[in-house]
Each structure stands twice: as structure tokens, then as C-alpha cells.
Length: 89
Image (tube, rainbow, N blue to C red):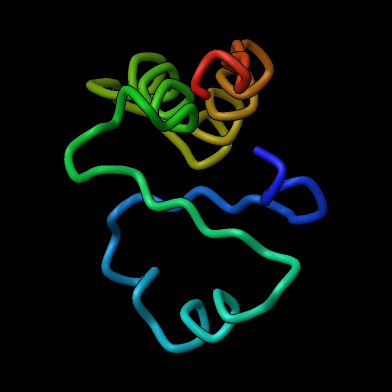
């Protein structure tokens, strides 16, 4: 782990937009270390748990107004239990 000591570690999934030149140009920097997750491995990505919780709170519901939707989103975000990132590494 010594090689990562002075670097910011950026974890990427396999999304195609991470192959864009703006991202690949950043990968050349000495102070950044890019780690790409294996394909089809949402269990390794903490944000996937956040999306699962939001989907559970918001999907298959009908909202009568934009205001009602906004309130539901705010409530879901307030109740979001953030995964402990250190459990993923």
C-alpha cells in the first residue's frame, strides 16, 4: 500500500464515460491512482447501496405534484444510511 500513500485513490466502475479522454488524461497525473472495479460487481461499489435505498423509497409510487416528489426525495435522502466505505476495501 506504500505506492498509494501520497495519492488520492479514485475508484471507477466500468461505465463507458470513464473511458473519455478527460478521465484518461487525469489518470496520467502522479497524485491520482485510479482503481477500476471488475465488471458486474455492484457489491464492491458503496454508491450502489445508496441507489438501492433510494430506489426502494421512491420507485413504484405515484406523485400528484412536483412538490410531493421533491418532498419524497428529500425524505429519502435524509433517511439514507451511508455505507461504511472501509468495508469495501
